[in-house]
Image (cartoon, rainbow, N blue to C red; front, side, top):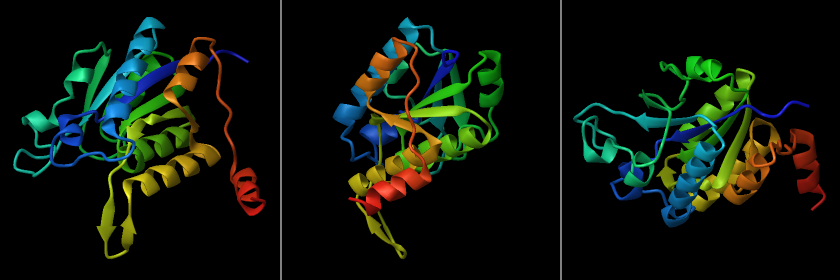
Length: 206
């Protein structure tokens, strides 16, 4: 089996999520942000292409307003090396961007996804990447969620993050920690992935 040809996709590691009005709660950004930075350092060391992504809303929008400080990459990310910067307006990093062409230019077959939010832009990108034929990895402690409550119900940030990462690992993305990823990529390893049936049987059998 040939070694994975990875790209690290750093999704929306922007000030809005860290100290702005739309703060990630779980895992704590004091954990996830340093792990994103560490993954970027290792990717640079191993010549893995790094693609940073920003979510942009209209200038008068209450969050991620284009041109505002909160829409900028957090300094811990902005100060580090990345090969490309993409701005998007919809959750998936593929939609109306040149991500696919960049991946092809680097001959990438495996996406490593970090950043925010686990359940929104990360999920949309992970699902679309799998549909487009890419292998996907995501780092559970280098991503994160925030809580929701609406007419349909409510869920804590921890619940949302846990449920989405569990679902990812059934088919869409191998879910690993940052340290597991670092250890694996240094050895050009791939990471195991569960499946729908196996995951369901494990739940039924306790």
